[in-house]
Length: 260
Image 1 (tube, rainbow, N blue to C red):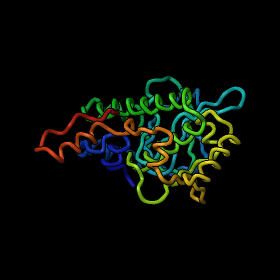
Image 2 (tube, one colour):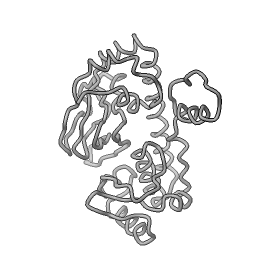
Image 3 (cartoon, rainbow, N blue to C red):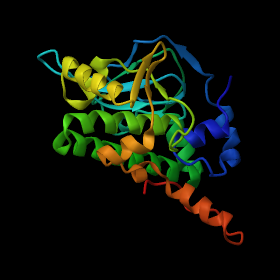
Image 4 (cartoon, one colour):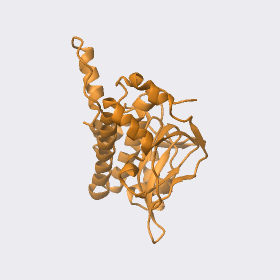
């Protein structure tokens, strides 16, 4: 199946922008590529000129350290775009791997440059994507530097659950997250046994269950209050503007997305 305008818009962080005007570019993109789980898409230190639009499955970005350790610093979920940083570097500054079977569309540097030169919407979306990634990484930095181990893990799980739910708080049932204890540990700067103890505590308090689909987070409101999770950094300005338009007379389309 080919990319659609909504796929591109949602992945680049601006679901309300009229990318249907860019249909010629969208029609030129390659078909979705199926990739098995646990496969490395990008190797750190090697040239990479592709941005990956994720249609299904999960990707992870990480750095491999000389002592064998690994630091995961971001994930990309369905409807998100991975690898914008590669366009500014001669070689990939980090590696990218699939955590689950995925379907992605590769967007090359040349294709993106052609699109941004022809479309103001495309240039604005690219800027919005950079801003979105920076805000998420800054929030991760706060967690690593200042949050307790329990709050660090809970904050990560809450963020990913909301991103999987298009930035909204899941209301009905659990939200499966296909993460292992080691992957959570590598993201939060903890050890797998320490994460196991935190998971056990979360299960005993009714916040977490583990099923065949992965981790499931429950009672979001209570857990958010407990760890001080504030999801404003996941909300797009374009979405807030849309809410205001619902309560006001019709107005021109708001400026393209950057993170609040």
